[in-house]
Image 1 (cartoon, rainbow, N blue to C red):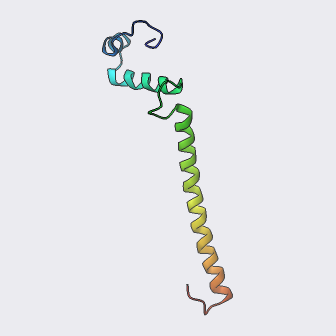
Image 2 (spheres, one colour):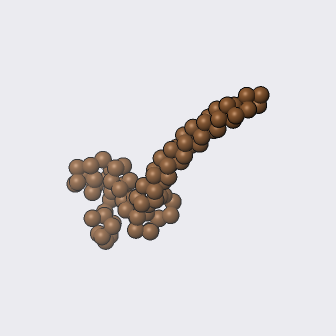
Image 3 (cartoon, one colour):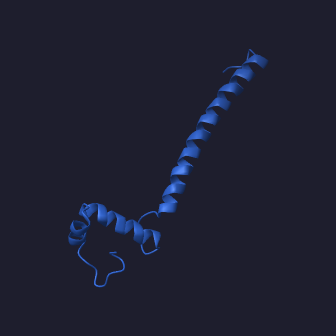
Length: 85
């Protein structure tokens, strides 16, 4: 509604009309502008979702690497008990 109206309404007044907090409406407007490619100072919704997925994958890979390191050390110790850990 904000983006299609000309001239642009005041966010405070529009927020009151919609029954939402002005800062919430301002954030939604900024996010819609980012998603439309009109802003480059924040992540789009798709980029944010991708970032969350990549962080989750990164955490899983770190856990897997730690398990592999531990298993490798145990196997190496069994093969050569004189080898330092």
